[in-house]
Length: 250
Image (tube, rainbow, N blue to C red; front, side):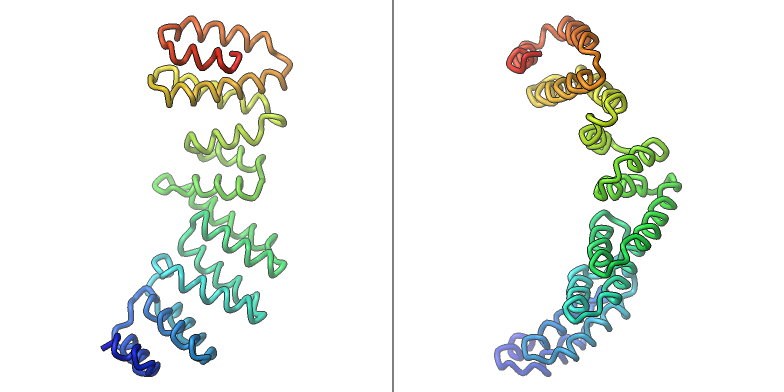
């Protein structure tokens, strides 16, 4: 029936078919809004999109395309404050790096990011305090995404971080925090020395180059030379690793 309605372009019939079986996550509301947009019935389209948000049982599980659709509409029509409110509500219900970025984009456009950021980070810090959540990871990612490296270091030390985040922190901090970055690189390198295979060797060599840069910033090149000498002695049976180190002057 839905196909027949569409083929005849009877938009009201299409809407009636969709409306008879509305999805709890707002997806069907979005389909109706898009159909109405195609025939220029924009006011009704917006009403259906807003209804979809209102009627969604849990914004954490809402069809994200519906949120994007309505937020974009608000922005295009000069309702930037409403776009921020929608993005804030979605972030509050589903705290991820993506929803944080979307809130930031809307709030920057509305010139209210400073206040919104403070509230958003407070939520993430509350999450990070709970040991049964992954809030600490989102907090560190959000701070890194904001280029707030000092705050990201603090959050990582207070709440923890995974190795990928520690590596990103070190990579962004080598010139300004060489001692902190060096400690991260050395820990990650130590783990890789217990592994075999070309992928592990390539990762280890990359870390060694970063370790060398840290020692240069610290003015301790002799310490690096001693470190590499000891590492070569301990890893000498790994011929592919030795070859890679030779290729990079290590």
